[in-house]
Image (tube, rainbow, N blue to C red; front, top):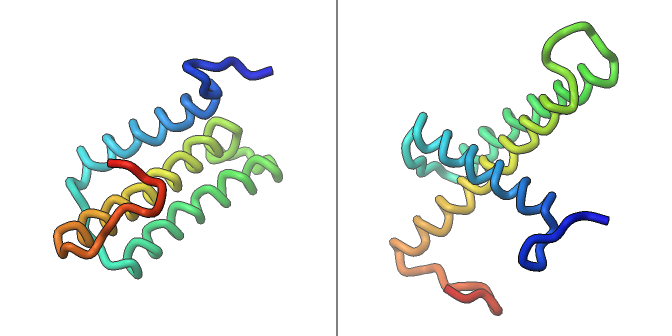
Length: 108
């Protein structure tokens, strides 16, 4: 059974914290990024490629330092963080244009 904190699964909280920390690192390195969806897709796919490489290096044990569960997790976090950055950009751009409303059920 997983541990819970305030009714939430501790592993989910740990994963979300890792993604948030990666977003902070990305913003510190690159600043706020505003790209078109095509550019975001290219950036995300580059990260997905690195995740795939970590998985394959782990599976085939090619003797590189690119495999292992720690690298797989790191690359998965980076994929999630880029997806989060894309969502932030979409919301930021739409909000600035007055186009975005909260989805049904979402609260500010």
